[in-house]
Length: 326
Image 1 (cartoon, rainbow, N blue to C red):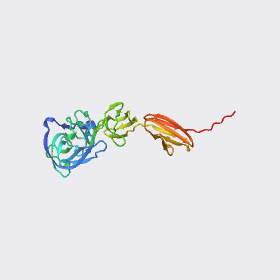
Image 2 (tube, rainbow, N blue to C red):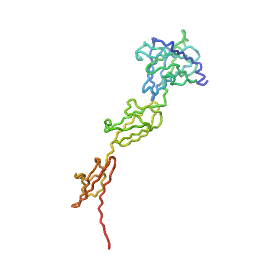
Image 3 (cartoon, one colour):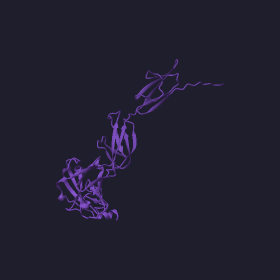
Image 4 (cartoon, rainbow, N blue to C red):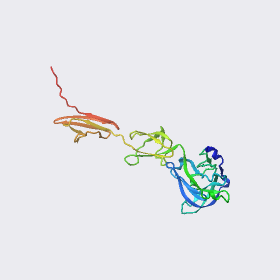
């Protein structure tokens, strides 16, 4: 029998008109955390035992939670005997030291005569499409209603003694949207930029800052920063399902630079100031007019140049001997 056929026998009872506050009693055997980047593991839950389910991470990327239930062989011989009950708005926070809670009974699922049962809990209306392979709650449980408690309980008194000691393996996994988050930090010299710039993601203008980040589809994207005051930047990045990508960018103001190519015996003056020794790496200068002077012994050569923002200028002095033959 395939997974679909096995689950046809499962029954879900949940109707908004019957939701009511309830007292939940039992021994909490553990808590499971549903988060995007880590498997929750499996907890063994006995009849009348309680299991807490929490959400972790950015739940805006969760379409829902899938609860997987491993049903022991001895239980499969009985139909309509046990059910998985779901309680929301649980108070206090589920703890192994507490045996009594208040909560809202959101519904229950009659366990089928199958090795596995899968229950999907949508976190918003219409977030999960019903499937023949799973049991989907018709009414969502929103993130604000977590933590929830699960309990395997008999539907009638006098259950066979052979199944009183049964243990059900339960795990919880998020059902994720095909989206992720970009967290972008843009600074200038370690502080907030003081001059205007424009940000685009995938060629679409975006505001900055965006404290909550940018929600993007999974896959590759690119961003671009343009400005009259900063050097343009372009970067490609990836977005993973339900995950956060962090990018730190440092803005740089485009400044003019001078590169000198002069003999070692030459002295170099910039705006009347001796550069000793002559610089061998690009030298940052201010925009505008500058006076360059070279001196070799008693010989002097002066040149006035005007430099512009973001441009690099190579200034060379060549000495050669000219020989003419008549």
